[in-house]
Length: 91
Image (cartoon, rainbow, N blue to C red; front, side, top):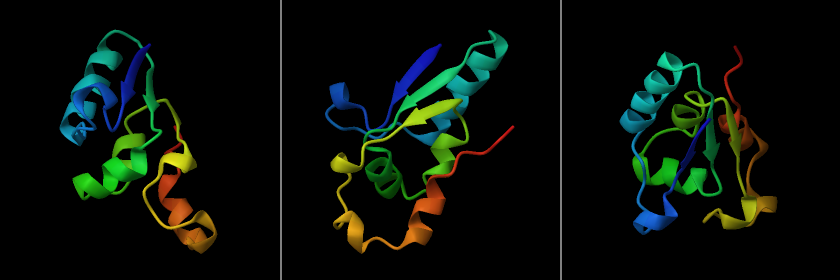
């Protein structure tokens, strides 16, 4: 299993680009490995990268996220349609 984190805490909160995720996905497929995303700050990363969260999550097999680390308004203010953006693609 290959584990990714976005944003990358050890790199000072740097956003790992989608192109890197694609490279990792290719490597994982070549070696029959799964890819997991620690997506505690995935919404922050997607906003900073200017892409939908699914651009990242569609390239991994599993993902976790933490709503307490999201730099957006209080969750009770978020439209439910926004959460549909987080849906993982299904095989």
